[in-house]
Image 1: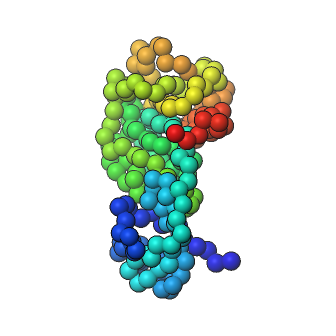
Image 2: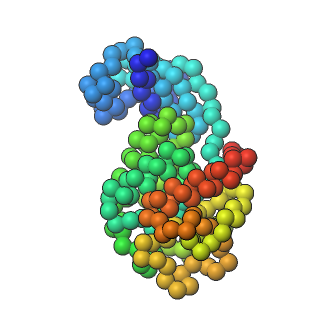
Length: 222
């Protein structure tokens, strides 16, 4: 059975056909060697998935359906210094359908802002690879701990914590590789243990997502 590419197509969509970008045209017809009339699937990143047909410049819309939203989980993370590790973090979080990633500015963090400049592109690539219907939102602005507003339960990844996980909407905060400064994180925020070992930032993000997802399956959706 031939591989059917899955595309993220930026909404809003016209009624019949959705224009392809120049890079998408090059990838589909030159790299993948597809031809007009080939089948593709596509998503608007907001829960709508469709199956359509290629023309030289667009996708003709076909059967479409809405898929349920993922668990309402936001990850706030002080990213690692190395670009490849940041990319891994974004891609895996997007494959696991995290709703939102926010970049944390912290006293002992050492990441440079330009390390996350292509994060949305990485999230889109992960959506296409995983055939998801939901695009992870990656904030371009950095936040401090004090900027984290209420409205959702907040857990701090901490080896000394426990496994208590409240119902969504949830936020998991993953700190810098240099550790937290004294009193940098509110003491009333519960600590979430991800195991007995010290994890790298990107590993901690994946472990936190899986811990919350496995616990919160019954709460998926809005």
